[in-house]
Image (cartoon, rainbow, N blue to C red):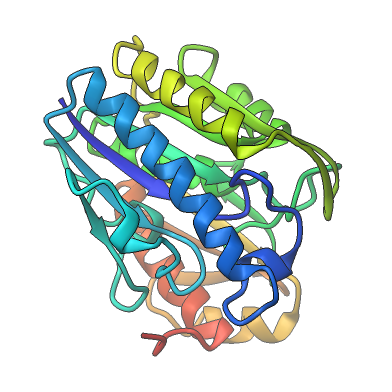
Length: 275
């Protein structure tokens, strides 16, 4: 079986503050090690269960967070931010059997969820066909377009609850910490979470999960925190303003709706030329 592992960072073992996840901040290098350990644990579990190919897609900030020289050499890694049209799901196609969402966090505004946000801290809400989603839901919808189901989610207890509400109970999960507030959590040490993630990844390979399918045509809406971002976002073709801070794109399917929305977010946030 062929597995894609999308890797965020805020939901990794032990991480509780922006200082853990922003390059150059005091705890970032330690957090890279924690994240790499989580990912290697998932890779090992998938391999033990018979995975024939594993593609890891880095999906946090500049998307160069993993310690590449410590990643299991049986996996490949997509690194870097620029030009990734599918963002957290870059590299997905119909050839994959399962998707793992590692180190994910809950959507913006989730009470007690570690570092909760949706894509950017400048986004207040994000809807796919009227369903309020976070980055986990966006990833599941994009993977589902290609017929690939989410089989494993790791992060805090809040993101697992969010994804259960969206996808049901068939996927495997690991709660590496219990969120107390946006910046504090009851954390399980990496010596323990590594085994938990490995075991869950092994079980996930056999999980009877179905893709998250979004109907066609598909409408995606984004509510920004400022009117100025809404001003710029609707400059992108197919993206229309529906409220002062909210824009919408409707297209034949979720991928075709996502791409203009993602372009509008990059434009409005000034991140479009990021490497």
